[in-house]
Image 1 (cartoon, rainbow, N blue to C red):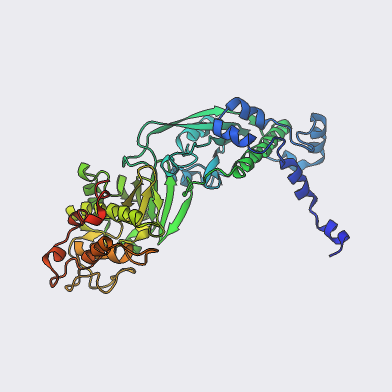
Image 2 (cartoon, rainbow, N blue to C red):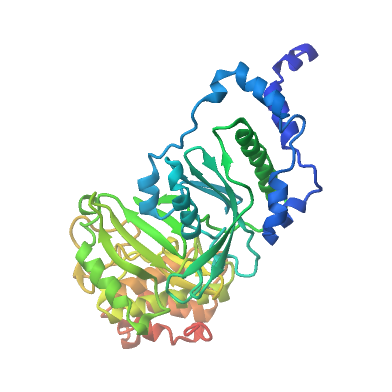
Length: 452
């Protein structure tokens, strides 16, 4: 390609925007503003003139609007998603930088509803990330806007916690309020000056976010407010809990586990004796009018893709899973889907927790017919009578969590694995055949982890 051709391929709009977006400050300066939450400095930042030619001089702006009728059009927020976002308890607009939620917005169609939009900024998702996911990393403030008709103010949000952290081990949802402080005036997008001020603020917000992205700040493992799909479920991280939804539950999932059983299961696990043993329901499971199963789960942790990298870490993880199974078995339930994707790690407490109870069943349930077996069962998961018992869960621990490791198990670890594999076998020694999750926690390999 010749030089002339390359020059013709340059998009002047792109080059213009690149020039406008370049920060006038040294790297790290704007990131520090987000970490400090200094509202006066943020207000000044949003008003920083954008070069090469923003904001326009008033006379030039009026002339431009006179020449371009489309600039005088009505700016009305799209409110089609408002009802859905309210049901999800998530903002109307979200913007993440390296999994940190740094910008959000609430939108209303009528200018008279501006106060409603501002109030929602304080009640919906006020954390850049769940505190327990990066317990020793300072969280930046969050930038936000409230749009109502043509009115558009910008804000800085700083959360204030009052117990029960989002990722902690309390097993309860956090109660939080937030300081929502303005960092701009109420901009009127029906006026030329209001639109120019909003555009200038938008450029400067981009500069703030870009500087944060380049700062090398640690990224949380999960993004606040984002929804992921997993095995037919929608998982959304919200303020202090995970919202799990299974669309069309009666048709697609109830063949495995009934809604009524899940109600009983979560109620049983809410007893004080099981407080730190297993995932909990912050609110009882429900079936929405459209047939979607919904449950809010606590605490929030980091999903596991596979085993820890050391044997000591594996022992801690297995101990956490066995504690969860002991709680389930004590209430007469079995998990039936024990594997790494159904285990989370709680960084703030340095412990592992068993999750995903939506395939659970009653102890001794007949699983010899369709729709069983489940995908990850082996030929030895069920007992000879075709029933899934507590011993079946222990066998899954051995096969799914203690096999295919990046290291070789010690003699003690191999011994526990063999005992778990033989759980429930009539022909084995009595110590193996009668092994329970509670008894397995007393094994020497788990010393120091069984009650952590």
